[in-house]
Length: 66
Length: 142
Image (cartoon, rainbow over the protein chains, first blue to last red):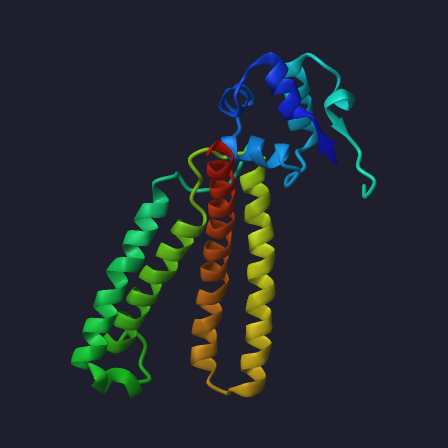
């Protein structure tokens, strides 16, 4: 699964730490999601999407391998 | 995400302290060789048995606390890492158990190994994964 959290963060001008604090996870988790090492749960994906005010599909997209 | 059945964060240090405390006690006894006379005494609760029981319990409880204490920030990724590490620990434990059952008949030591390996391997693997994530974050920030 791919995501464009990094781009969305840049648009909104928030850091990994800000995002982590808003949704109540560690910075490490945001970092591993951004670098595609960790696939978040649906709950976490929805929370991230809510921060950016966009539907989940605009932030997370399926990869060829999925 | 709620993590159930975990000890508070500071239990990790409490657990490590128990493990560290148990090491010199056991070494002291082994080095000085006092109370070796009771080693072959089959009675329960003779001094040898009580010493063995208390030190083993100290270590096992210490390992247990260190293994199942909460992280500073508990989230779903730590839960997943914990589960993955537990799976690995069980695999490694059973492979070692089967190998040692085939190659050895020293059941007392096999039991002891069985007591240690899952928790130690779990702690090492879990902490290694946490360390890797921290390193990745630091690299990102640099």
